[in-house]
Length: 161
Length: 279
View 1 (cartoon, rainbow over the protein chains, first blue to last red):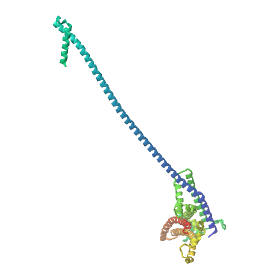
View 2: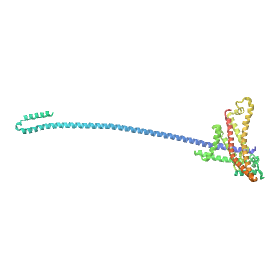
View 3: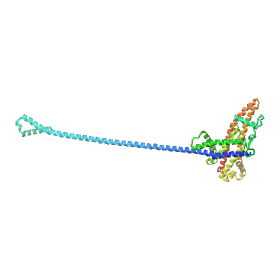
View 4: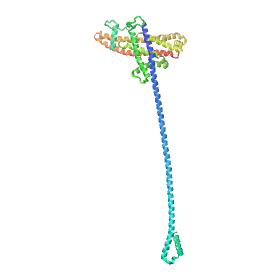
């Protein structure tokens, strides 16, 4: 083996060893590590974002459900209230109607009574007038006439009954 | 074709140009000294090829390295095609050799050495088929010897660091062998572990490269001879030898890679055996 053969081989090997050891491989490994780290970081971030989105969606859904429940509750209450109000109105109307009917009846009764009384008085005098005109002077005795009229009217009344 | 031509000019240069068939010889591997004759730093063609390969490796990996740096500095996650080639190359040694044999922790410890050995051998081997270079930087025994010595020192260092002196006793006196047999077993173990391992590492690589080079020279100088010096019918043989030369050139690409892989893998396995806990 030639001396210079070994020397040159050693020189070449030593230079390349140092070069690979301190230059190429550190950069190579850092590059791979950085890539691994970045990919893992991004995956984690994506997972987090996904979880956040899911939570947000769940929130919105819960809110929607609550709003829906609120709305239906309000609707139910309104319906119940409306029913109550309807009943009240009806009752009030019925009461009013009954009152009107009653007062009308009373008025009619009163008027009938008044009419009867005035009629009785008028009919009496009219009859007396008529009878006096028919019967003439003899019957001008008021006391008798009044008795005749009263008895006539009482007769009328019993007949009527 | 360029390959064939340059091989032929080289062959013609090496042999006296008598016009006949020039058989390849071992002189191929001891070319003329170019500079610094007689000093420790004599330069010849193969040494120049080694320096050229080293420069090429430094340039290529410097480019990759700066790509990696840019990547992690600017947080670029998607590598370019060029960067990906570098990552695949370096990861081949890292994952398929270092991590697989040694595990992640020890794999990372010895990774600089293994990476250097792999790419150095691959680069030196491949010059065997690169036009105008045409000879592998590893076809002179010096470089394989240096690398084998490094592997040898490394696996002994790994074993001693972990098991102290038990590393030697456990290797030379394997457990589970009846005591009298140590007379037989211990010399064998010593020979195989501490002598044959580095010798075979160095010789396997050198001989593969020498054989590959001789085959290529034989094929292409024969082609030259048949085409230009043979008469009539024999010129046809030239086509045959040329096809063989082409086939062996392709085969040498495979051998270059395979020898780099085998050398690195065996170094890793020796380290792994030294670290193993059965001792």
